[in-house]
Length: 201
Image (cartoon, rainbow, N blue to C red):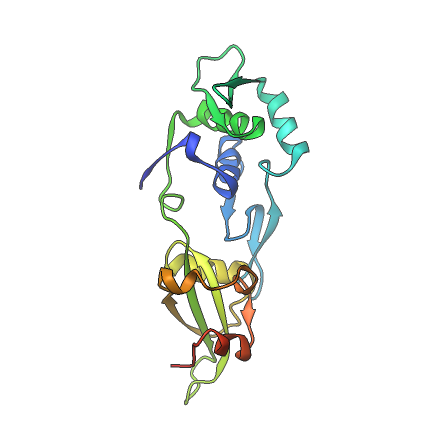
């Protein structure tokens, strides 16, 4: 586990920790924080997106529920729970500051979060039909994830793991820089994979 300061949480990670602060069971994928989740027959995660960082109605309800007081501070935004001696949240926006204050009120200035501590990297996943000889290629995907195991988990969550064997390779940062955003986190055609210079191994 690695210590992450609450005022450094953002995006999906902040959504996840707000859910935890609310006592809601949640899971993160590469694309969203999900609640009321389950795995379908293909092993893909399904659930309801939980995103108070992007949903104004959800964040407004939380601010009212917790009595969050938001104010400007040094060119940024700060927030605290009225009448409670808990750490402040701060952020670039009022919502970010408020949500961080809610998390800090529950967990303190920092949380233990091994996943959020790792930056996202690109992983090349090559799907091969199970037990086929010679290997029968089913497809490629470029997945943004924190490590190889997380890449496999994200692929299942996106429905990109077609009941096959899979080979996982980390893409070096120089090569990853040249992979367009619209070619990530989805299946690639053989032509798209070839355009990246990758072939079946």
